[in-house]
Image (cartoon, rainbow, N blue to C red; front, side):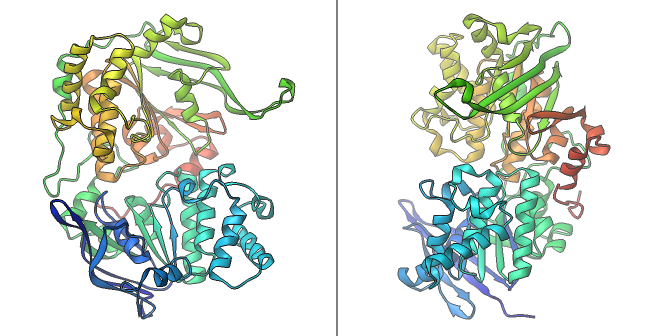
Length: 563
């Protein structure tokens, strides 16, 4: 067996606080061998990213390594000074960050950033650095690399930006790459491309990869070894097949049980119960004061008829010279009373644009949207206000969709006051009731969004969406940024809302197992068009369109997970 390229021995990270020392990482140990992909999995706050930051020397002060050792190719590196760590970072250890848009400088072309990194670590001329950069772009499957070299990050799709970040990590032929949630925000097809690329590079260049993720499907599909972390400690470590197929620790078993299954539909998602951290929801209490769901006149609460949306791709002072991108191209479907209707497709397919048109955040360039038989596209301002009271939206990113300068009470009360549904005093009472019903602490209304975790912020978003007692709820990727345990909590809330309140939902996601569990019918979109629409069971058992079959084939394999 080859010697480890990286060894972490009894690593402990400390952060001094007003309440004493906090240890986000405690006594962590594992090895990484050349060409090996080791998964590090756990919930948010488990310490997995903090361990990766300690390895690469990116701990934010006052966080520091208090105990333990880190060895790279037989050399101890944890005690090195800032300059020596900077020399190793990038040259010996590369990093792939979660959000490629924020890790690339928007003011410089992709080529300039690659050349800068290459010349920082390798003694080569500008021409040689340019050739190497173009070759790297080609290696990570960027089309027309010589042309793309001169473009800026915003001109790339999400998946292509992630491939550029991988190229940056490979600039100086590192021995180790730390990949921190590299596929979290990517759809299933782009995720498969990125993971295949990481596997190819690990085998081809014998790079050791630490893959930090909360996605058990990615772990199953990509890694050979896996380390499971909880509350800063390693609870279980070993071969991936063994850990996923026959987990020994109670927390690992609980974490795996919360993973949505693509082959069977469950009434509720099992929650991660280890540590007594299950959250109590009181949807039944909320239902007692909820108006009885109104039946639509036709049995179809929402009807989308041949809707079209275009965006200006290139503008000109002469309108006829403008060029347009058709984001939604004559899409039609209906959503029945009390139904959960799913829309799936890769990034750029138009599914979120459809949602924003239904929510009146975007105008409709062609076609009609009927809500309970009334044409929304022909409504006056008073009609739109009445429509918006009955239809609410939960967005993908709960942090960016909540105003950081407003308290939670003001955020949840805003639609009530804006639409004139309740006076301020009554709105205050409804806000506190809603926050209590979705499982938040009684003093949550006083706080600001930054004082909450991702899952708690999403519950605030749900409370805000429920404030007007809507008939129709749009959920646009509501769990894509959450780990598997928090995802289970949020999805259970949505299931309860549908069951106890009779809500009708449009559920948008690129996570196919989640769609399998949540939806009654599913529409598949690509390049602005609706390619297939079937009952969920039929779609997963016998997809009709080749693109649907391709999407389903790209789901990470989960066969070895118990249950």
